[in-house]
Amino acid sequence: MKNVILFGASNLGEYAYNNLKNNNDICFFSDNNSRIWGKKFCGIDIISIEELCEYKNYNIIVTSMYWKEICKQIAKLGFKNIYIYTTDKEKFEEYNKEHPESVWIETTNYCNENCKFCFHYNNAMIRKKGCMSLDLYKKIINEIKFFKPRINLHHSGEPFLHKNLYEFINYAKEFNLNVGFTTNGTLIDKDDYYILRTGIDRINISLAGVDKEDYEFIRRGSSFDEIEEKIIKLANLKRINNFNTKIYINVTETEKNKGKIENFVDKFEGIEGIDGIIVRSLMTWSKSIDVSGMKINNNEKVNNFKNYRIVKVNNLHPINFSLCKGVYKNLGILWDGTVVPCCLDFQGYNNLGNLLEESFIDIYNGEKRKELLKELEDRSLVKTNNEFCRNCINL
Image (cartoon, rainbow, N blue to C red; front, side, top):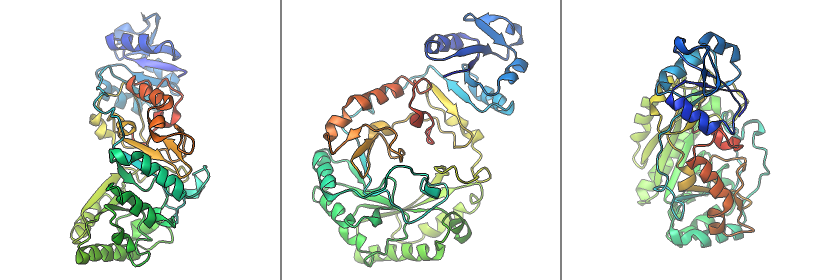
């Protein structure tokens, strides 16, 4: 990383400097202690707060135990590229299993909606679109069935658009695998709600809004009344026929709808057959819309920090500093056989291999994945060229 300033000329600052100096262009230290301004620390100058303000385009890495207060201070000064450094470590051995707990299989990356904030909005997805072949799908299931992962038949598209969806579910259920997917819900009435008869274990219906105004602003051309009617009928059919499928409703909380969330939850939790309501923070996949007035103010949520060595403070996304366990617990497979480390890599940036050419286990235990895990274990995201993980919307 170029143009780095370490904020905190202390023991932690020295530790950070020695660890980062070979791979980063560290220009200055800065500190709130005016008595050391103008002096040197680790051989480089310590600049004052006033001088610091001359470098607002630089990358600030806070190397102090008072990082919470300092982050707020620096943010008020107008700095955007703020990072945190901590020596705390969490052992990854407990997450590094022989097999993933969940496998995300992208049956297709086509979608029938054009939701704002999604990577499909205004054609933000640049990779080729297609549908997974039945032969490839069976190869995947045959290679992973013995360790019984949770199967999620979606990744970056609408699963109901695949003509072989029911066959996909049936084949996985032959091996007693737990199968589910997330859908936008507009096609759940397909074939008179036949999806319930496949024995699918889980259906997550993702709603973009909590009421007609909210929903139809995000999903132009779709009807909130229609999707609500379909959900109620799905739940009633499940109840009447004693189907065991779990039905969940996902909804996104924004600054505009946060006052309506409680009523939404109460309404849908009151429908017999609905097993749960999941309220998620807004994640913006598309950069085609101004969402500055819609994101929840998460400045006070900085207390969620849990042991990342270097983490970027990103005001555009909810601040959540939990360790990335996703690459240990999950693996994604795109429709063309490309394997990616997690369900968020919708463009396929982190290509770990292709199942048309290699086996699942060979890719899972392969050098590309090991290299990625090492970067995460070393907390070296600030040094890596892995832009996808470094700018992850979940970190």
